[in-house]
Length: 271
Ligand SMILES: Nc1ncnc2c1ncn2[C@@H]1O[C@H](COP(=O)(O)OP(=O)(O)O)[C@@H](O)[C@H]1O
Ligand SMILES: [Mg+2]
Image 1 (tube, protein in one colour):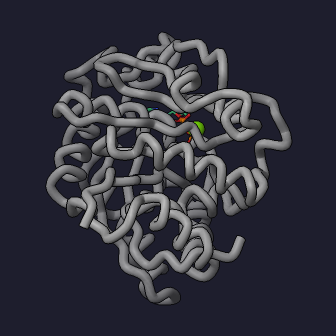
Image 2 (cartoon, helix red, strand yellow):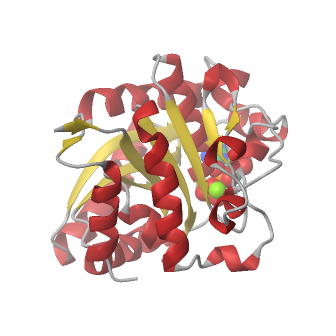
């Protein structure tokens, strides 16, 4: 049995719900717990992760797929040694990567996977091919939901598609932009109600993040909120989620390499 990094996707049905901020700050919180973390910017046509860090990406995942660069040329390093695989902005073809490109990407990623404890994948929103692909290669699919009714219905739609097309049966849930723990539980309850009525999947609540002006300011200042305002309400919520991720998500041990796992998952999916 090999010990492989925990691969966690941060995804959503609706856009603008806080995925990129959650991926970046959860990653930094895990780094502060001495974990080695890679963040993959998987919103391939609309890169955001390096922008939140105010880091320049000279090369991107696009150069990797085209074969003109190695993964070491492309990875950039952020605060505390966190590694980032940046995406490209404004390249339309990247919004639907080809099957052969998926294969190339997986083999590059598996070459460095034993260096990391966690790989966090910040996906785009919706139910497009790339979103299904990146969720299919994750051990733990994490759906971000807010209180907006459209966010809840879009989360339901995404769970339904990921279950039917990618055969994913378990989902982690983070509720973002709420006023209290009680509101977080209420929204989780609403999602749980509709999902358990119509689908045979299991949901697991990872926690909530409050609406916080510090987080908005941190985005404007291009410094992740965990570093910009470490004791702000949203940072404390994110640290709690990171502790839960550490405690709750079992160490992933599997027979065979992570590439074999990934390829099996992709083969079983239909997207
Ligand atoms: N907990 C929060 N408190 C306040 N504002 C938030 C919070 N989460 C997200 N936002 C706002 O939503 C915007 C979009 O967040 P982002 O992480 O880019 O979403 P996504 O990646 O899902 O599109 C942020 O720039 C910020 O203004
Ligand atoms: Mg984003």
